Image (cartoon, rainbow, N blue to C red; front, side, top):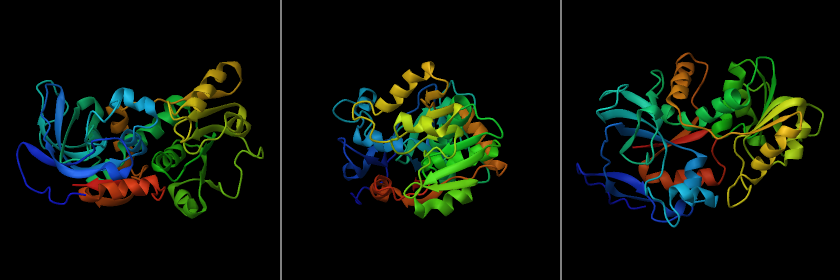
Length: 333
């Protein structure tokens, strides 16, 4: 990475950039234009930015369908990153919920930089009892987990919930949230992360390298299909006759849309007793406000693995690519 980009300017800022799609090797530290503020936007001084799997997909341009929104041949926004936590610097004339000096967290495109701009409907006030780094790894992953459990899964107290990828970004929050909502939680992960998932509040943990969670010995009311690429038939085998499976993520499900298996399950759902639901998570300030209350009450702990300075962002992404992260990591400015 370019370590010479350290000069200061009111018109530019330090940021991570990419001029083409690819893996972590396309990322560079450079000086980039500082964003301006429109009437309905909020300018934030970024203190920390969370790294999520969606950022990696936007970086690589895969599955290829993401390029319809992010740019066909190269990224429209050369600065990656979405999650953030920071301090409001300036607000547009139409902004009513925030003022300069407010500590906030939420989602802003291009958060791997010293400043970022976003709409107030994608922000909430930062939980007071956590650091900026801890707050920055909450919005997208915890918001997705919350919507998977409540909006799509309609989880109820006492239900049995299976969460695949329980040690990852979304999974780490899903385990905690499901337990706080009164469910009996089983987390699936690798053998090296069993203790981590148990510490998050899972009542049972399954090592996917040794045990088959879909062998029919136990059935679940709700499955959050976050990691891997299990066939729909395997998910159904692990569900109760009226159970629900929510497709939250999963890799290697087609290079075009990345959702071949998920769409197939959703199309099958109306013809069977079980519900197979494709989650299309939204970035909502109301969710971030709810999550902030859960964090402040001690019911939810940010899933922060470690922090990396801005100039080591490419290395942090490489660790994500290698599957070496428990929970999430933050990029600090």
